[in-house]
Length: 130
Image (cartoon, rainbow, N blue to C red; front, side):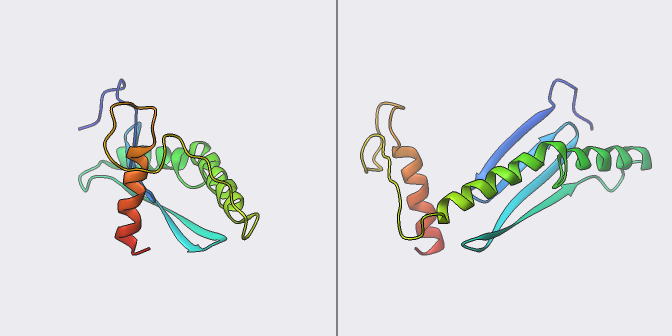
């Protein structure tokens, strides 16, 4: 069943390189696939139902064009990702470091800390073996 108009936009990051999005009545997964330190591939997977009518399928394709790789919404996402990538490699062996709340990953009683995000990245580094 199609969603009511009040539910038009949900975007959930499920991993550093994957996002599930529901925009209008399109469901998609976006992936960033690192290729090199200066290159990535942005992949979109759009979903529909096998029993969609031709009209509904055409509407989903139109909406996918709105939020797909060359769509109005996604163009700036790709550009922002590219700018971050360029910033990461810009200075070669130099880097900047800014920390809020120390280096630990233990649970804290305030949101004015980076413990949660540091815990996430610690787990992610372990997952990919670095």
